[in-house]
Amino acid sequence: MISQIEGQVVESTPLSTVIDVHGVGFVLSVPLTTSEKIPPIGQKVKLFTRVVYREDSQTMYGFAMKSEREMFDLIVEKVSGIGPKIALNLLSQLSVRSLRSAIINADVKMLSKCPGIGKKTAERMVVELKDKLGGLPGSSNLVSDTTHASKPSSDSKLDICFADAVAAMVALGYNPSDADKSIRKAQLSLGEDAATEDLIRTAFAQKK
Image (cartoon, rainbow, N blue to C red; front, top):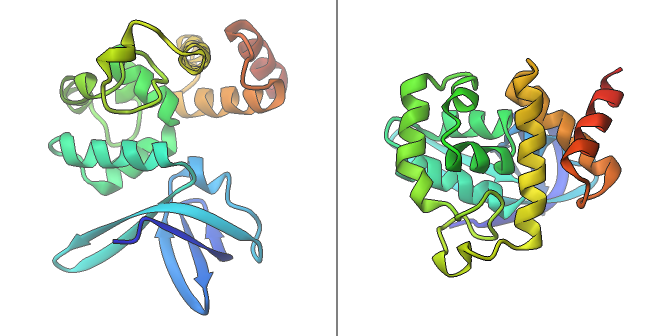
């Protein structure tokens, strides 16, 4: 099992990349949230991987963060009717933070706005994953940890601010993917400890 790969970027498109490792080119399917972080061609990159085997194919998926791979695994393994392609599409539309928040808060409306996810599938995701995620959006572990659920960490609070900012933009008419991307861009500009209101204000300013 290949758990990670590190090498030189040879090719890069929004949903795939080719990494050269000692003369061997590995083709990886990646979500948009990962492709945004892949450096220019010729530079080195490290991705966390998951290889999915089928009777007639073998596909390697790459992720910039372990949490993305963990969410991918959880969706594919625990939600009936969702395979790797739809899971990758979900992670292309929403960051792990937004997905986690939407599932925990049973935000079926946000989930069902993602292409390939209808209302029934979104409801099934909530039912089958809610108890397997941390007690709060942004828990350090994807798997539920009741020991720490009553004491949200500072990271959890930061993720709640992020999720609230995305939800606010969606409520104002933005699609989930654009809202998530705008808030991530605003957070990069302001820093991880930015408040919800500041994230929203900066996201709007950057869109002008």
